Image (cartoon, rainbow, N blue to C red):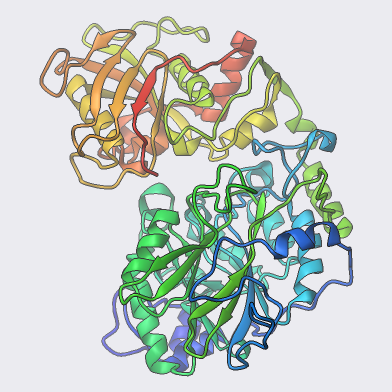
Length: 622
């Protein structure tokens, strides 16, 4: 996408759908015209009313603290019962992120929930019922989506964006930004999905010359009735971890946010309240808050981070909101709402006349079907979701194996996990060079090559599998929704050492590219990592091929050549584990879901416990 020395005409922008805002600051009239293609007002509340008094008293009093000496209540009075400053403005935000096609309720593991009596959570019918009850109680509110609606269940695998767009249009969202997974099937499919939505998609840092996609994006949106603007940014790693078009690029989120705030201040000086809707991750949201000015609230996604009060939300990884000081000493509020739609993010804020938040209340709302706070589902939307589900239900229930223990996915980014162990072993078993494989007729590799084992990116393992119990096709497809294929690559021992050192250090030692995912391996590979050591010195030991020690870059077995079984996503440079190979350099061996199905059918029953193949000292950073 070239940068225009002068702005193209409005007619050219509208006809060609060119995205120019990421590299230039266009005339406000052009941008505002584009933004005005989408409605400004709030959606009409549903007539479906249910009483949630059993939880409302508990939720609305909950808070993590307050800024600037304000009150935690949202009653219109301060902590002494006096009327609040009438110049201030109250606004409620509801938000979701990383739903990953979980249209229907699901088990806590993320897998489907065919038996609600076992406990189900989330699902858009439940979210809609709650939103239809809550929004009419708030005079001013916005409902925002921080991206990654795509990938994760058969609703996307089978229907792509069709079912998701139909469901989202019934929720009353005010705006969406894009996650990295929205690009998994390319720009054209994404453009078609966005064209079917009845609410705007905001992006301040995506620059594309794909005309169909550019027509669906606006660089910011203003709500005049709230005196508020929203900008939005997507992780710039999307270029390497997803599948955007060659001419679609992602500007640094901090740079894009600064420029957009600057543009809003200059061209819309009456707007004092600016919110950033992001898909860059919690840690990056905090950095965004620190490095910018003018943004009062960041509503994020991408990292699947659970925030809240540990007394009421066990395992919360930070406060909701997390309050950060920006580059000029002002407070910025950061919120996010975990993953899959298990929680609905909710925060009430009160702005002063300068656009600073002086009071807040709220907390993530857990969306469950069990007492003491059973949340109902919207019956009309539930019927539609079940209709979509009928298209794959019989097929999905086919049993392919049995697990004696639960197969954990939640810890895969922090160290060894049992589902990662199974995945690694299955990938190793499918390799044509693995002569000891329990499946297939495999032969030993040539004399100058040794089969080392399998490497899988933790980010490619998407959902846990409950156990003990049957493993179904749906379990497998929810775990591996991307359709990646197994492949074989050849590396020297020295290269493998540098690869695993890079993964431990979160940076490719050859290209300096950031590595966003941890690793899972087969049982024939063992490694020890000390996350507390300096970058480039974190890999303590490595052995492959059931005991062959690789002693550093130049030590024992460093020149020996090894075969690794992995996936085409990694082979072609995804997650930056190694320098990208071209498809001509490897053969595909079947998709990962097919590999796991074949492995489970061959072994019948599996029982996985942590066996120490990956040992981590300290904590792997997200």
